[in-house]
Amino acid sequence: MRDVFAETAAAALDADPRPVVVLADVSADRFTDAARRHPDRVVNLGIREQSMIGVAGGLALTGMRPIVHTFAPFLVERPFEQVKLDLGHQGVGAVLVSSGASYDGAHYGRTHMAPGDVALLDSLPEWTVHVPGHAAEVPPILESALRGDGNVYVRLSERGNAAARPAGPGTHPIRSGSGRSSGTVLAVGPMLDRVLAATEDLDVTVAYTATVRPFDREGLNRIAARAGQADVLVVEPYLEGTSAHEVAAALSDRRHRQLSLGVRRDTEVRGYGTPADHDRAHGLDTAGIAERARAFFLL
Amino acid sequence: MPTAPAFTRYADLPALSGLMTGDEKHRSAAESTREVLWVLYDRVLDVSPETADDPDRDRFLLSKGHGPVPYYAVLAAKGFIDLATLRRWAEFDSPLGHHPDRTRIPGVEISSGSLGHGLGLGVGTALGLRAQGRTRPRVVVLMGDGEFDEGSNHEAVAAAGRLGLDNLTAVVVDNSSATHGWPGGIGTRFSAEGWQTRSAPGRDRSALDDALTRPHRGRPLAVVARVRPKG
Image (cartoon, rainbow over all chains, first blue to last red; front, top):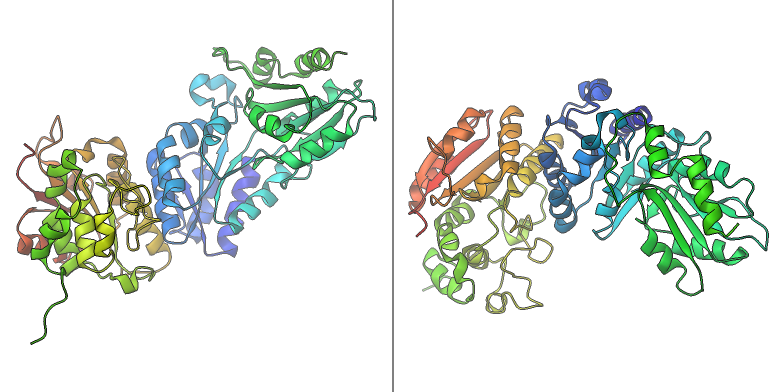
């Protein structure tokens, strides 16, 4: 996804005078050619993450469209006050593109993990948040983000699904359960293939979204209404329960149960290893999702 | 005999400031910036209420957003804000608060108050103008020596120096309020990063004018305006 992102961003620099890429060393090697073609529109600030958001705010104040990119913890968590004040509070927007997701760099340890990024941005109004599940979903997401003026977060991952799915806003049914089904599983971005495997012998509807903010409340409500039960299981690749309040609002007109799966928030999983090791530790591998789906749907 | 419009002179600033009461906590911070603000808006910056949205206007970014009374007074003297608005400052539906909001006041370039945000925004503004080939406008950021403690400023100082942003000027009003001080003076931090650095008495309008307008080429400019220590 990171390579596709860099290619798409570089092409956007060629096609449109508005975008500017702001970097803090991470992925700078992927923008060498673009920087040669557009020396004033590829800005590598060095390892200065507070400045990269402040600079993005200043660029946007002059009418440019900043694309700001580094690893998730350094893009969202370290400069969070800059994100809040230098973008939203100034009334300007930027496109923040992270890589590393929750624990793609598991061997780096906790310092390079940011499972709370989406929850943090969710504390601010008017952000659009995309969580693509396949590299081919990245270009349409980025191109659409660059056409607008608002604040957009694109959360790239090294992992994802075997096939690309609809990347725009909306909740898309992937596998429909029967009229007597137990409910709906909403898989966010890279979680879809695991969710499909974990629920293949359950009578549930599986839906997919790569855009979690704004959350498609209406779409989820419609899908839940068609299932035998309005119970909804959400499987997100970041902090558990991040979208629970959205699901509650989406289903506030009907009796329902809901459960959120995601990265554990009750403990800091202090391990290295591989992303698959962390999936197991958080119950986000196929077996873990299957076990909790069965328990939740009372099957 | 023609008379000057009311409340448009330097001598009117105390009267204009007097319309805003209730921010005594920030009085010394506020008082320290009056001459710098006046010189900027009266002699240095090419911006007016008529050109407040012109992409080629000069930009003034008040990073030191606390104690904005003299800022509002100068903006009122220059026609950006009317007198009636000053009287209602800090009321719920007033556009003027104890920290400025750019979305509510014409001519105000940034919303500020939290320390250490203006210079990063200024670097981005300078870069954006450069990327658009706008070589005429200058970007002036006003900050305080206490605010300079924030690490975000040091990222911005280094980046601006290395990127050679000669359209960027930082004015640091130094009233010695930084708790641990800056050995050798704040100016040395800027000059070490490749800025052209000047110093002027913060109450001396001619000296400030000179420091802000004398040519400097290829490098950002820092002007340290020294005022009486905060007491």
